[in-house]
Length: 260
Image 1 (cartoon, one colour):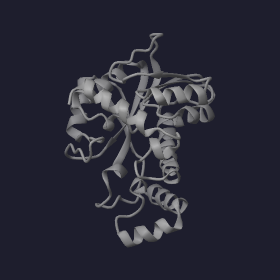
Image 2 (cartoon, rainbow, N blue to C red; image 1 turned 45 degrees about the vertical axis):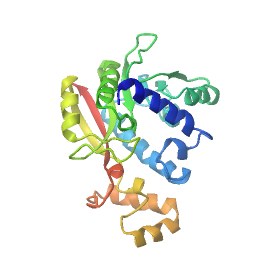
Image 3 (tube, rainbow, N blue to C red; image 1 turned 60 degrees about the vertical axis):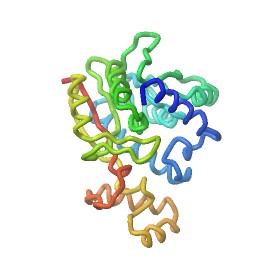
């Protein structure tokens, strides 16, 4: 697969998937909106910690670029949590961006491929993020180009936040997800003159919908997504080691990258 066909695939995938613009469409496939709301809450918690560690404050102006902004969850997150920040969103889906222009008309959005987007005003950003996006690019060269383009949009003293699963070997489990190995990530990061400043876990096992044991999982699922979320957060904050059987989605980490 080349970069052009991968970009076409992604655009068609998301333009087709979006129908009602709820979180079941932009989050984990086959997970209902309620579970995806909890999954997004976990991402937001990890994001807050990363932002705090960078010294970016609620009452100070700074800029953020969201690469792969989807239907605008993080646009709303920044407006509420960091109202002094300037937010710009970019997404490959024209359908999603058209929706965002109607739903959040006072925020700046662009429809473009992350591999090639250039800010029309020539700006760089204090924080550039791309959360749960890069593993959707199946072509390795395209993914590396997207990471390079995002890194090029970071201000001199800024940071790039991306999500990556902790896996030993590159694995493509479906026709829309490709998780790269640690060796691939390390090699690509180094080639861009970046370093890993921090790597934070995001979940315990919530994206999997509960523990691997099917009977326990069934029982917990019957209790509802709120119980699953509370148990996940409790295990997470207690620092319990993830079970060996936990899926790769639950091993996603929020990685802070800065220039060497």
